[in-house]
Amino acid sequence: MENNINDEELLELLHDPETQRHGFAQLVSEYSERLYWQIRKMVLSHEDSNDILQDVFIKAWNHIDTFRGESKLSTWLYRIAINESITFVKKERARNNISLDDEDIFVANKLEGDTYFDGDEAQLLLQKSIAILPEKQRLVFQMKYFDEMKYEDMSEILGTSVGALKASYHHAVKKIENYLSKSH
Amino acid sequence: MSANKSDMKTNLNNLENIDKSNPFRVPENYFAQFNEDIMYKLPVKLKPVIEPKRVTLWNKARPWVYAAAIFVLMFVGIQFYKYSVNNRINNKQVASTQPQAFKGNIDKYWSTVNISEDEFYQYLENQLTEDSYYDFIYNQIYSETSM
Image (tube, rainbow over all chains, first blue to last red; front, side):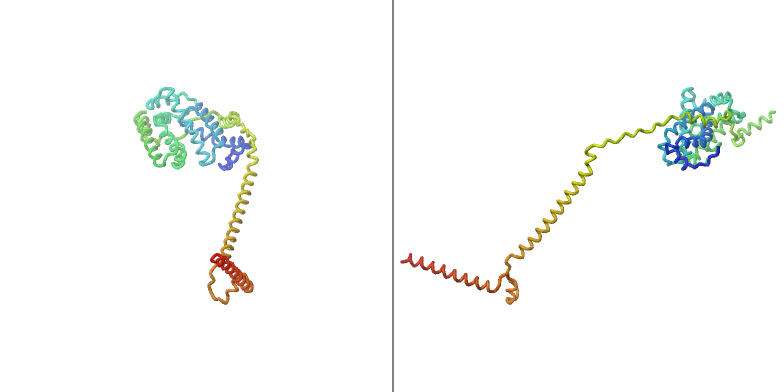
């Protein structure tokens, strides 16, 4: 379904009780795929990503009446998705009693048994190296490296300065390359 | 074989040489299905029940009370203004009737008093007559007592 509706038109539909459900269906159709991949890169498993994506849209539905368009709709949704993903990763780590140093082994086990992961050895290694990064650094690396997002857009979503994001990305790349070199 | 492995090591040391394509998959038709399913999972939003606002007697009467208060204030204000204006006029009138020493040309004297010239001479005559009478009585009494 092709959607050319802009934020303003979508908000108009979402703030009118008569058209709210129809507007929300358009919002889901517009953003579900983008948000899914953002979540998936953080939590890796499809089932977990699916659960989180549902939670994100239910939260958005419950709070859409209070959204007044101070930020872009996409920024608002990304923020919810990122918060949910980080909360999930932290809870999972605590539940399985995993330290950041053991995260790569945990991720390797998780991905090797995942039917929805098609990566080769190099890609699996890259995922393992990403897993040892702190959450925020992991997020910055994925947004920049995989999604090629502009620092300005990342800054709006993450509420961090462009300078800090550049530094964070630089550190992340160094750590990953260091991990890759040590792995061989 | 060992040369290949060595190449791979070199490649993997450099991030740019790793395939950037998405290694993750989703089940077939996942997004279309998700978009449909999520709409059934959204909680129903209850319309807020708006209770009719209770209107008390005071609320009903308030505009009228305010209007009456304004009217009374305006009435009192107008009365006070009228009273103060009248007072000022009376004060001026009293001041103008007070006897004042005549200053200026004597020929214009009669144009400044409220009695006619004839009335004035009549008044002087009466005064003289009365004075003569009192003098007579006085002399009678004292002359009798001295005898």
